[in-house]
Amino acid sequence: MNWITNVVRPKIRSILRRETPENLWIKCPDSGQLVFYKDVENNQFVIPGSNYHMRMGAAARLKSVFDNETWYDIALPEVAADPLKFRDERKYADRIKDARTKTGMNDAIKVGYGKLDGLGVVIAVQDFDFMGGSLGMAAGEAVVKGLELAVEKKSPFIMFAASGGARMQEGILSLMQMPRTTVGIQMLREAKLPYIVVLTNPTTGGVTASYAMLGDVQIAEPGALIGFAGARVIEQTIREKLPEGFQRAEYLKAHGMVDMVVHRHELRPTLARLCRVLTKAPAAPSTSMPKPIIPDAPALDAIPAAPSA
Amino acid sequence: MRSYLDFEKPVAELDAKVDELRTLAATGSDIGDEISRIEEKASQALTDLYANLSPWQKTLVARHPQRPHLADFVTALITDFTPLAGDRKFGEDNALVGGFGRFRGESICVIGQEKGSTTESRIKHNFGMARPEGYRKAARLMEMADRFGIPVLSLVDSAGAYPGVDAEERGQAEAIARSTDVCLQLGVPNIAVITGEGMSGGAIAITTASRVLMLEHAIYSVISPEGAASILWRDSAKAQEAAINLKVTAQDMLRFGVIDEIIKEPVGGAHRDPVALISDTGDAIAHALDELRHLDPATIRNQRRQKFLGIGRKLV
Image 1 (cartoon, chains in turn blue, yellow):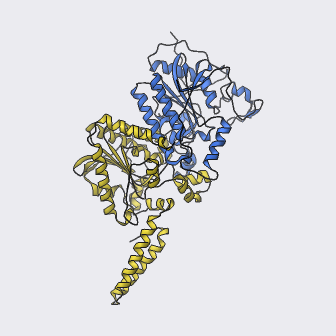
Image 2 (cartoon, rainbow over the protein chains, first blue to last red):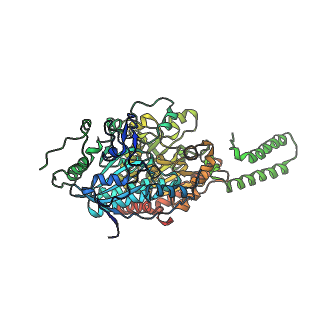
Image 3 (cartoon, chains in turn orange, brown):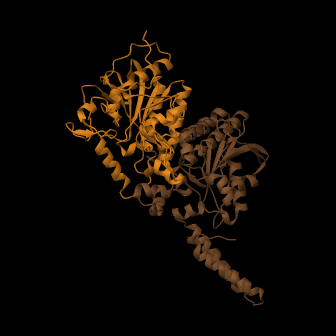
């Protein structure tokens, strides 16, 4: 089975590579309070107290969703390197090299196959730390590969989106990832398998204008910035101030663009429940949360958990 | 009234000289030889200039105010054209025009951006920048065409989807994604012609086609050169450099396998002889349709999907 490159097991702590030293205090971007980094990490990167959802790396995300924090890393197709020979203030070739060193990833999307509450699922995660999660040929191929694998495995496909949009340094070939990923979604649709999108902070541009908005179910994390055009571009166009909460997850929900805004701590059971219901699998006793819920979490904007059979 | 782009200055000067001599000739001076000599020189200068346009110069040509727009193509190529309006959900968007008619006798669905050609019509068409309603109307018309087995022609010319609060709150991103989705689902052939600017998501929403044709001096890009310059160079004045780096020309697109064919423009660009250009475009559309017309819906759909999946894979 050549798509398995690496079984990620819980004991093998694969490079949890936040550049922040583990013993550091960090400042909540929302409330300004100082919190101990380790506490944030242990809380799925949600700031205790303010409930601000920080960005989450791809490996941490997969770990937070799969059963037993275990999954298969899926080998992703190789793509042409720097086809445009792009150079702005720096060479694209150098930028991408730096991003690889910084993140330990090959490109912005990681794909895993594993169990979610006992049900096989394919999960793709876009990592904003890798060049703003930008959608280039590698990321496009990763999404296509993930969708193809889901079809092969007859399993749901879950996409955690986080991106500034298209990777400009790959020019038109980056734009082509919009129709290319859509082809993959159509194959999944024809196989009658569910496609669930989780929009995380931020998801914008060509990513929202393609696979990130085509889910059967659209979930957003609280406070996530989600939109097509950047706020600055819009402000310059209309020359007025943007409305309060503009392009935030809650705003999208109010405008009918997402099904639900779900606190990160409720994400795993929500996804598990949806996957099971949509594939007509029998209800499973919900697995416990990988991390404890902090007591003062606000009322969740999600469906109440149904009693398990 | 001729209008010249900045880089056409040498040609403009020669043309002005010809005009001047003509006025003189009208007063009786025998300078016919001199006039034809300079005319020839002007024509040669134009030919040389357009044989080697830089990506930025092409950008300017692609945006030329007198460049033929959707209305010109439809008037010349489509009979019985019946525009249809509205997305049946919220509103009508004049930036993206659509309707049904006949192309060389056969039924066709036409969709595309119209930039407008006068101040009044530019405002009416929002400079060709569509809102979600435009893309939802396009999707509605394409689905109708699919139901009736009628091919779709997209005429693409837009600086991008409209970036506004209203567009965002009504789901600009979703509307674009869904329109691309519909393009890929069609069991009828669709032909896209990038006539001017094919910018970003606003373009791809209707350019995801069985055959993508592009005018010789049109541009196609993930972001405008100015946009890339202000983000990557943090200086919008670096647009020329961005245009070079982004590889926006039809010739680049053909090389990358992103488009299927280039439609040659008259010397000096489409706006210097729109009639000839539109007629050639019609021939190219007819040729593309002839190749696809006999195929069954599953084959058409599959070929389109495979074509897009294949883009970029050969570059490895």
